[in-house]
Each structure stands twice: as C-alpha cells, then as structure tokens.
Length: 224
Ligand code: O7E
Image 1 (spheres, protein in one colour):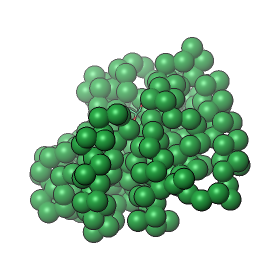
Image 2 (cartoon, helix red, strand yellow):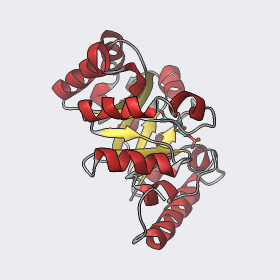
Image 3 (tube, protein in one colour):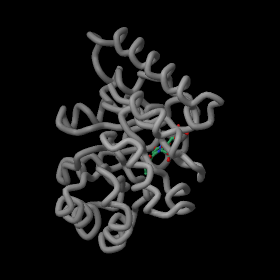
Image 4 (cartoon, protein in one colour):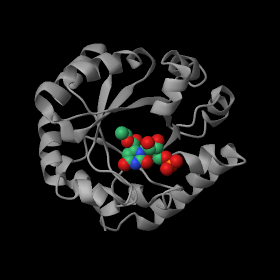
C-alpha cells in the first residue's frame, strides 16, 4: 500500500516534506513547482526525506532528444521520471528509457489520465498504449484512480512486476484506497493533502482510509 504526495503549487515545502516523511511513501514533483524553484529544489527537498520515492513529473511528451535533455536537468535528484505513453517507443520513450537506465533511474509512463476528458483522448488509444508498455516494460505506469477499471486492465495486462501509481484521489473525487483495491501500488494525492489546513492530519487520515478500504476489498477481484 502506497501514498505519494504531489507537490505542484509553487511554494516552500521543506518543512512539510520533513513532517510527512515518516507518514508517506514518496513525493511527486510537479512542473509548476520545478519551473518556479528550479531543478535544484528537488535536491533540497530530497535532503529532508532521503529514503522516500522521489518522482519528477515534467509532463514529458516529445522526441527522445528533448525528453532526455529535460529529464537530465533533474534526474540526479530523483528516483524516477514520468513521461506520456502516447509518444511511442522509437525515437521517444525508448531513448528516454535507455538514458534513464544508464543513470540508474526509473521510467514511469502514463497509460491513461484521471480527468473527465481523458475518455475522449484515451479510451480509443489505450489498447495501443498498452502495446507500447508491453514492449517498453517501464518500471512504473500511471493509471487513473478515478477509473479503477482502467487500473485493473493495466495490472492484468502488465502483470505484477510493474509499479502502478494512480492520481485522482481526493480533489478529483476518487476515494482513498479505491485504486489500490483495483491493483495500484501507490495513490498520488495532491491538493487533499497540500491544500488542507493540516496536511499531516490529512495524510494520516488518507492512510487510515486506504487501510480500511484495502482490508475490505482484499479477497475480492481486482478491477471490479
Ligand atoms: O488532484 P490532485 O491535487 O490530487 O493532484 C493530482 C496530481 O496527479 C497532479 O500532480 C497531476 O499532475 C497528477 N496527474 C493527474 O491528476 N491525473 C493524471 O491522469 C496524471 C497525473 C500525472 O501525474 O501525470 C503525469 C504526467
């Protein structure tokens, strides 16, 4: 069971990261934050919580050359980098994966998204993106907590060896634990924690809700 906190809004997170460190599994650094504070800010935050899983979300969807340049700016400070799946393997994700492999870093690829419009964009594309993921075998995949059925499809297709991380819990309406029950390893939570008056209490509450939902759904089939 995992909880990753999305840090998106530009701001100072040093103290919050220190407080959340023992309560969550990792942090996803958003593009607005990294643009405002610079890639080195990732290193500064990491020093507050070294053993967590640190993921850079640079909204990568480009040719391999540009994705490598962009990922290279922050790679030394993080464990994993996210890229979009629809750009394909040759000249794009394949190059990025080779580059990250050479640095000992992990690639996470978006299979589908959590917002309502993702139905227009992703429902017809998902079978092709799943083929891409099967060929590429990235370390991780992003699949939407708002659509647990999609999480289940990704898990069944890619098997147990891939880390599935699911955004959409809290502000976008999915309940804590719902994606975990569908087969995800981590739920990504941003505003429900960072926008709360008491982010530590919010993270602890979400943890408890994850645990409660997971213990209820264990024994039922994934993706239902
Ligand atoms: O809604 P929140 O505040 O809990 O934040 C959700 C976070 O997950 C935010 O950082 C957003 O960029 C990310 N996210 C989604 O919300 N939906 C998706 O489908 C995919 C992502 C994501 O991380 O995409 C990586 C490119």
